[in-house]
Picture 1 (tube, helix red, strand yellow):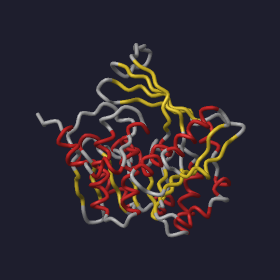
Picture 2: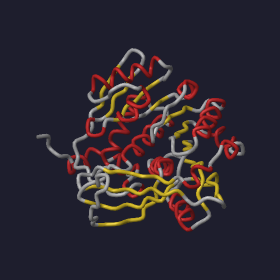
Picture 3: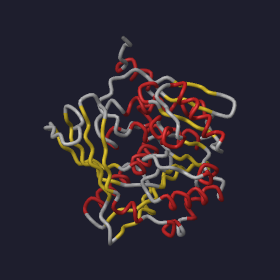
Picture 4: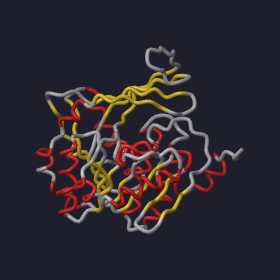
Length: 311
């Protein structure tokens, strides 16, 4: 089983020609209200990819919270451990998606900020059944730390997607089996420039020296790079037309967790995650863009129809 400890948000998505600069107003062309949150996206993706999946998190006692729980449940996620907080609203994310497919996101965490280590104390039974735990940083850092400790106590493989990026201490690094930052997050975590592949490699090696076990850096259209103690390998991305990158990282991380939970090697898991990420960016929305396992199994045929020739 894959368990996801993290956030549930309602995404308020505006499509626009470009992301506004400070002080600028841009006229958008479309608005949608879409279930999201990094944790919920990852849980939803894992379930759609065929894994038994449980979501651990919190929403407010409001219509958005009810909708988020119902959406996950409809997609096959176990929501028994999604708590409802009376004193806090459901988290929301304001997202601008520009025509290029890039996005800018501002999150108001709401009930996610009220998901505490104490809330996890009654959830030990879920950890005992899990093979892989996936966690992000949209809930309090002490909740993340507690989840990592509980996973380790139960011999659960831990994957930390450090987004949004904050500085992390050595204990958290020591509790993580696989760390999956993008290059911007890697820059903050390492304190080093990551403006090209060579610098990404140097920053990655720095984190390995600090105690990170295995590091996978996602590089958007360039793919991802696995950095270990004695090896570095680049996994190129598939060339597709990106229309919305909102949940690309979430689907990649979920696919990684699902594949590892099935006993696949890290190399094969990264290859699988690369396919899932490619399929995700060709559709709009967060959870609405996540592919089903049957679609990924037919990836080669799909890619023949969707690939974009390099210029």
